Image 1 (cartoon, rainbow, N blue to C red):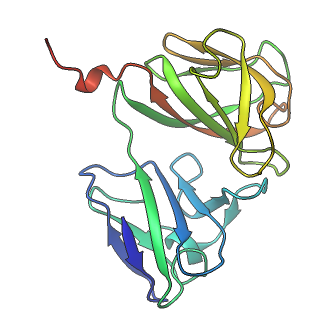
Image 2: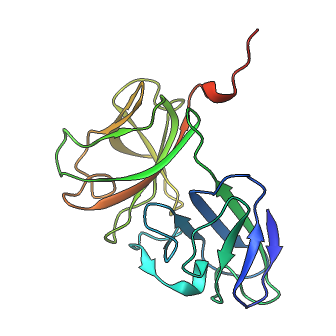
Length: 205
């Protein structure tokens, strides 16, 4: 959805009917960062899609308030709610068999964490949230149709495709790399995944 900032604590309707697990906001009229809220870090914190920074705390972005089934909240800060600036917000809710949002902890091994999604992912995005330096990695099953899936794009840069290894599995994904982007020991990573075959909405024929 789109909205116009007012510089005051406020709410914006999202129309999903269930609370979003992830919200990405970008100003359309001003030169501002991409702000990201995610349920795994709580909406008293935020990430920046255009940087490798760790999550930061700040009520000025999402007013330290988790989204509800009808609205998400805004604080008074630039990046999400500058008075008279126009914004677009992309809101994503978790739907069983269709989308999954959460976190995992890196172990620094090529036998990395397994992340359960409940479906075979077609698209996976993840980012280290507890420390800076890791990129926003994107994998999909079109560019990497077989494991290991190594073709990786980076949402925070204009760089060419790189290689960070994961396995895309029937009910989740498994990290197969020691890259700081994906699997530094003890680092928390947030993720977003969408299903290859979203059975939640498939129809009989």
